Structure formats: C-alpha cells, structure tokens
Image (cartoon, rainbow, N blue to C red; front, side):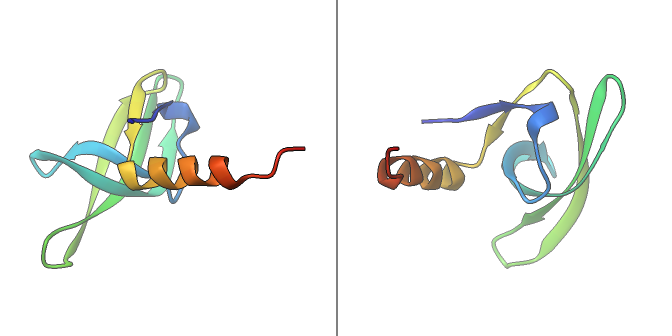
Length: 85
C-alpha cells in the first residue's frame, strides 16, 4: 500500500520518496519553502553508511508525492488500534 499526498500538504519531519542523488530514495523533510506554483523541500537522505546529505527537491503544489512505506504502515496500525467514538 503506497500513500500519496499532495505536495502542498507535506510537513516538516515527513518522510517522502523522492528522486535525489540520482536515485529514488526515502528523504526526511527538514525545511519547506513555497510560492504560488512550487514547493521547495530541503531534505536529508541517509545512505548505507549512515552518512547524511542535504538536498533540495521541488514539486508543483498539486503534485502527488509518495510517503515512505514505514510511515504508511505505522498509520495503518494506528487506525486499527484507534478506539472508535
């Protein structure tokens, strides 16, 4: 199950899947800047050797962005165990 959200809904701390460093990978959003048409995300990536690099990725405000699978699974678990009112 892959959760997609609109780029304008991304928040600091979210983990997204983005093309960064010439490959698709999980990136953690550190800072967000936006204008009328684009969202610029300052993100960090963690490689195999725990080295982190910072990059900027840009999306159109209405673009759909993949959330990292680990967060999708955590949200699904929260929904299962959330008490009904």
